[in-house]
Amino acid sequence: MSRTTTDRVLNRRRVLAVGAALLMTAGAAGVAVASGDEASRPASSSAAPRTADKTPTAEKATKREAAALTGSAKMYRKTTEDVTFTFDAHLAAQHNADPSKATGTFRFVHLDKPGGKGGWAKGRIDCLMTGGKVATATGIITGTNMKDIKGGRVGFTVHDTGGTDRVGYSWAAGGPDGTKKLPKCTSSAPHEKVRKGTGDFHVTPWKVPYPTTN
Image: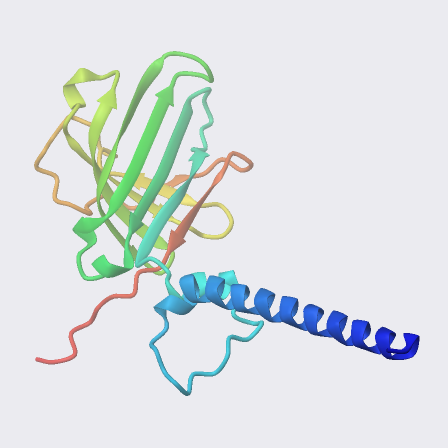
């Protein structure tokens, strides 16, 4: 066999090897896609191939939770008082018709001054409803330095204004008293303002499951 013929054979073998490697890489990528977001799509022999605009963000948007209230901020005060509310409340998509299936946590702290004396409480969320950018949630106090209120239910209302958010709470006319009789998802109007630069709250609007028949 001449040198020219040998070179041609070797070059052809290299091309075939590269092509095989590319096919193996593409096959592996296809398996990875199928085991991820493609697995949730209905099977169809005529389904269009996955396009580049099917981003993780787009996938997340199609699987959004039913409602949410998150964030932390301090309340505006003309005194030295340091009051902070923190929420991480969520209603999963599969529980859209039952706000009492909400989960998550809350915490509030009221000190006479930053780093000073005062009270605090934390707990688990047991109800969450949102209307537009307003959220109402309740929860059971599971930890606190005020023993009389442990185990009681408290409520919160947050208005996510996109600027100066507002907050309300069920003990607005007095103080948390450890009541267990407060109905779920009950609170006061969001009468307090967030102190600028101390945090922010985010509300995911709830898609109300209106009846479709009488």
